Image (cartoon, rainbow, N blue to C red; front, side, top):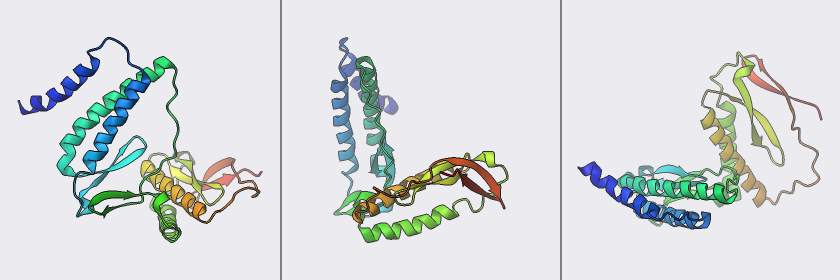
Length: 232
């Protein structure tokens, strides 16, 4: 009975939205989805923050929020409604020939903290130059050591991913099945921090020599994956 009471508001929500036979526009659904997302943000910000480790980072599309366990039930309900609205917006976009799947580079948070009683995520674009340099040094060491305990015996088990070294993107070996997602997340965050550092240093990339961009092969050398780049 308790479970049914929790489901009924959601079913009523769907009924009220779907009672009209008229097909709503993409603008209509996307506006409702945007309003619902604002409700979700307001909910996650409603819990006073005293211990940041009590909050977990959750991802909604390209966005990140901090969620306290005390509001998981309410959060789940709002997320159901939000996902429904997003689905309807996607269907409407298809009917209207709207392409709204715009690629945005991953922008994961660097850390989380309590700030004026609010759970707050700190992103690469929030870092000072000193903070960015410190983060890059630490994170590059972690990235280089990430696969130290994984022996390369078959080059086909490895692929490549791009890590920013300044104006260039260099190839780095990544295992296809071992901790792949975790490694990608680390590199994505490193790349965003590098971009912040370059922005603060006002680095201009115009006129630099061409960056090597063509990969010739990956080989296992002394148990390590080695990327051979094609000559320009």
